[in-house]
Image (tube, rainbow, N blue to C red; front, side):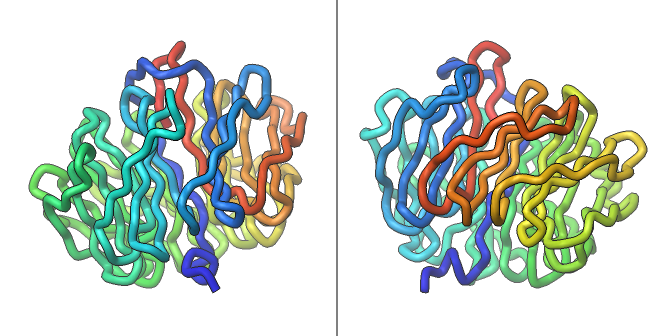
Length: 321
């Protein structure tokens, strides 16, 4: 059985807003079961490329300029770096261990990778893959979220019920925040003042004040919340429920669940882009596209076997997520 499957792998989304000179409105989706990377034009909602990658791909992150992608492979201890212009051009990094959660420095110099089994986060050279520093965190580090402005990295520790906070320059872990049971996915709001953590076992999200590293509240969503994203266009928070085949929509101001939207089977990754939601459904092998203003599912796009994680680049708005 694949390590990624055993770990109930899902995407942890990193809402890092940075300039890019990449290609407009492109969504990249990693399919774990058929080891593929799919490129989608979100303006036309069509697949524009499909390439194979090394076995057992788990999570994906993009560089600041949108020209490079990094994919972790927990089973083999590798990371694949791909060129978004030529998806066939790639490097293989071998940090070893069980690389899982990943984030990229917006300057494009460093990659941060959580090692699921060794309970550390490594800082790698983004050009060579060399390990520069290593920091102990809680048990089974899953999602990573990077706040580049304040030089902080947030790490969801699934088996420690906590989030570690690391200063990225020194790689010193200076705080550990107690959250719900089974924290897995996490993301920052546009200001970086609030962190949203999906707790898969306790069926809720923890809302963290990043100014004082304290939990403000927990919002009950039920089921198994795995993916989380912020919809800035409509001031909403989106949370996938793996076992319920739905997305909960939370008002970012009142922190109340205002609706749920049915999606495909076993939804994991979720992104909010220009008023639309994109949900990768692992078991049904497709992408649900949502109108976030109306709360309707407006399209379903067939992908491959086991879509799990996503990254988005938009040259027109200057964002990489």
